[in-house]
Image: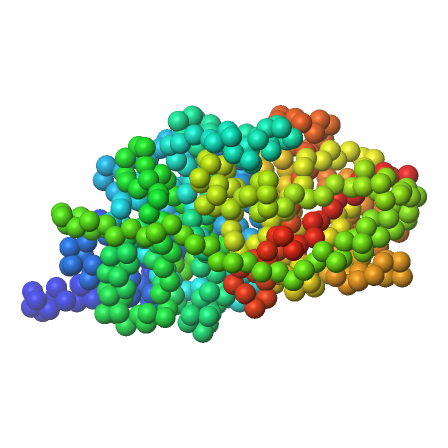
Length: 530
């Protein structure tokens, strides 16, 4: 066999191993085996990387991973929070190698759990950089969305802002949740604030006709030139423009790789798969385990060219089906529940035993990404794709039962997916979640006393529900002391109390969540066991 023939046989063997193994070079000659990527995606990624390198661009590769409950101890130890994670829908994120001379803050290196050596989940952005994601989207589900966040910046709080004064005056025990310094680097503020309108399954379907299970490409960049450049390179490998989606990083960010620059995080949310996702053989479970996605960092290192920044984002207008007319019915439901439990109350008395959820998108909190960034507020991973409500801290002892009553967005034309979350307050650790499928028709037993019960849900929570079936119609969740240890001080920062959250995702026939101003606030009723 000739020397030349031996070379090509060897080359083809190596290429075959690469394409068959589901991994290829990330940077240098290393192999990143975490993600099982189809050969068609690998082929496109290799050709894209090769074309951009030949064009004079610097390219490095990262890998995708899940942020799960197992990562919470790292997050809590370093940041004092687990971000109110959804246990039923773990975040998907990626880790990338820093550029040469890029500052990696040791105060936040474990903010989302450990990475492979030489990689980071948080990244700074070169003004002439693009992050490119290629891959296969997951199987059909209620929701898929990709969004980039400003995670921390070198700034200070606006102590004269309305949200700051609201929490300082009325909820001082949680002020340091919403206005938070990085625990191990007090020169930086935690923002966790969205920067733009997210790219979700509805946005993808409207542009490219289908989303789930399809190959798609995402570009995250602060530079319009880099967006055009990457799109031209993708066109050369036969990727259609309709299958490419760009998330612009607004020009008012403090871009750069040095220590004072902003740092960023990109998250994917994937919730309520149609196959359930409970079985290891479910396609959605396989997708989460494989994460068939590739991520590149690409930057222009050629001297002389100025970046072409984007203007600040303009958020899309949100709409809603008006629920406010249902308020008398919700009051009737509260009274009926109280009477059934032998604790009858007048309207005023029922009000004293009932707490409304806080609608965080509305004044005085105004938890919308760009607004949070302007005043140095922690936006808690906000998204315009949902309406978010949350309670204060609640003490759960053996004698108390909490009943959550609310409109159900899937029944009021305000959501395609609803999640009622349960959180341990000190860690901001979500340990349970009920979907609209769990909540539908749970108020139906009150149909003779209350109008429109088909538009409401009613669910109970106690230490032990076994003796409450007659009072709860079986719609009760037991919360063990192992899950939430006893804590009798609602202001305590040394033990976990209970907190509820409500999320209404994507109003039907729109691509964003419902407008909070037309949503009826959820309520939690405090009941006593007999």
